[in-house]
Length: 336
Image (cartoon, rainbow, N blue to C red; front, side, top):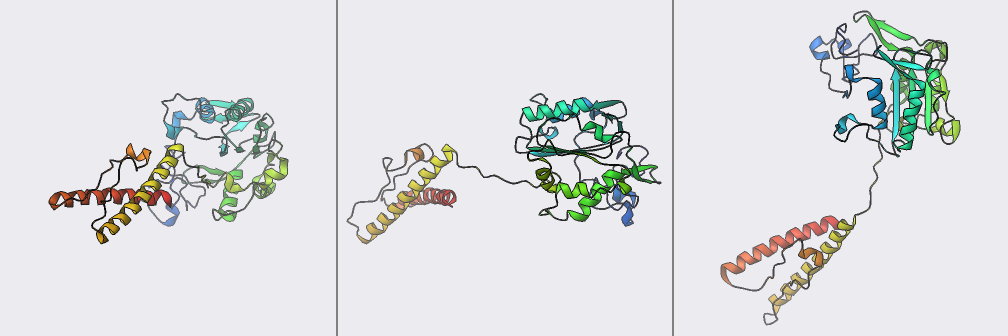
């Protein structure tokens, strides 16, 4: 739609005739009194597949990760068994199918098989599957994989309608069910800490406004309808990710131990030097290879700091201080 030659605002997509928000830019649109040049700054959304790339085969490959190893990571769905995935499909469709590009279609069984492969390959934790098309509910009964919450905009033999058209562009800009989904998100989910639930989202659908009856499946989800309805909307829509901090690797642990040992040697050597300054007759303080941690011998050149005179003493002292300073800094870094 953004690149359709009938689009008066190339590269821009709006969800209302007021054109207040360019969905590709996310900042402003023509409704703000700005010209065509301003509307064209579309940098807010990254589109991975467009035009002839949007096919049924590509879609199934994307879900199941059936790509060669050389395929760009940026165009893959990089997920695992901890991932919550939102799959939102909208367009023309009918009884158990959805059209792609008006030239091919994906069937309910094909979708179910793709989800089954995703489950077998541990590519998701849970899936929220939303479909906005005529008879969208007919795509749901074939689903059989666990931990899927699914909703379709209309039941069998029902149509799904557009919300309104933009006369300047000459086409409908958004479907009714999608419009009210977006309205709920904009009105109710106002921060990344929102606790609005999937149940509240689904309950917000008014058949008198949507002009169809929403079909919902909770039974595939672990814990049934109650657990499914309690899931947060932002688990799927918000892209809010928890970060897990893993433990140290064996190599990192060895570094920690070596640096702690080096820190102790530095402190002991500094104390010995202070004692030697007070009592010149005491033997010189040195750090020998025998005293250094074994791991450090592979990573650092252990310098024996002996008392000398003239320029050699100054240069040797400077090198020792630099080495000790680096070691001390690394020890502090790993300790804290």
